[in-house]
Image (cartoon, rainbow, N blue to C red; front, side, top):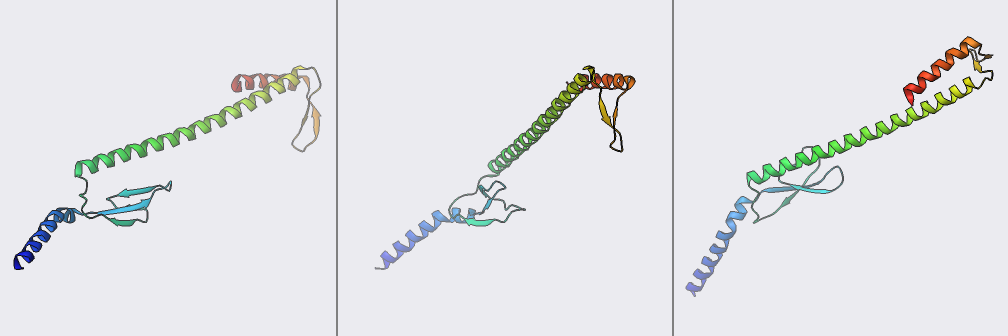
Length: 153
């Protein structure tokens, strides 16, 4: 009977001996949501997000080299995300600029068409009063429209 208790005790000690390295190496694991709402698991607590501690017993933490590679890969991924975001913003700004140039080109061409049509051109002064352009003013406006076409078209 004593031998049986000794055997059980030895068996329990053996099991605890096998589990001890995992328990000793148990590290805090954190779970949190990133800016896109995806769950992220990390051995480092995020400084700017609320994190929930997840405890895994019997699982060895990653070695230092693996953790450094993971951090390097994450930094590279973040950099690529920022580059794509910047490229998209640049593309949007470029498209907006091109649309403005196109509209300015159309307006300049229409102005030139009207000025060269031989019709009398009416403009409005600062007080809102309409007046006809004389020949000299028409020539100046025509030259201005041509320059705008060169610039915008």
